[in-house]
Structure formats: structure tokens, C-alpha cells
Length: 144
Image (cartoon, rainbow, N blue to C red; front, side, top):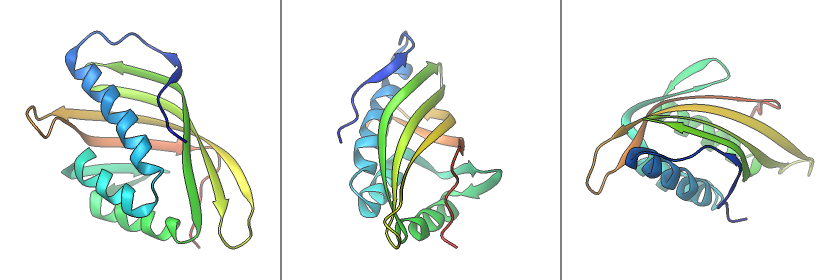
């Protein structure tokens, strides 16, 4: 599934906001390429010292990569359409769906996720990257 639209967007008014929007669309489409695609995306999306807060746990980028590696061993995860996208200055709030399939049981669920993300504009070829993000979903996954 190619992600390229938002049901309820807010107007983009600044160059950094357009860069964040572009990074989000690009990132979601890379995510849907599996764990290897996701890792490649991570190395361009996040600052090397970025943190990601998932279900109340503050993780370094390396810890986050490890956690996701465990989840990809047990689940397929396909990011769906953005329901909402609010971008102001170097912050964004996004709400989207994730289609998840348990590789062991075959069970499928549709998860709703909300994220708040702070970006840094590095300019040049690097562009905008995540400094810190916070995410919550209505159906938390566990590799345990």
C-alpha cells in the first residue's frame, strides 16, 4: 500500500513543515518494505542520538531498533493511511492505522496509533530528522 494522502490535514505554511510532511510520506512508504526497509529508513529519519518513547518507555535509537527487530520476527506491520496530520514549525502530530498480522497464529488486527514528533532541520542533503518521538497505540504489541 502506498501512503500518499491524509484524510484530515492541516495547511502547510513553512518550508520546514513541507520537509516534515515529505519525510513522513517517504518514511511510511519505506516502512512497508519490511524490517530491512525500516532499518534503512531509521538511519535517515532519526538523529543518531534520537530517542523514541513507546508505551511510556524512553528508548535510545539503538534500543528502539532492537525492539522493532523483535516485533518484526513475530508480526507483519503495514502502515495505513494518515487519519490526521498536524505540522507546526518543527513539531508534528500524526494519527494513522496499522494492519498487523501475527505470523504464528495468522490473527489480524487494525491498530490505531498516535504520535507526537519533534524534528531538527539539518539543511542540505540530511534535511529534517527526528530528535524525539512519542507514540501510543490502542493495541500494544509484545514479542513475548
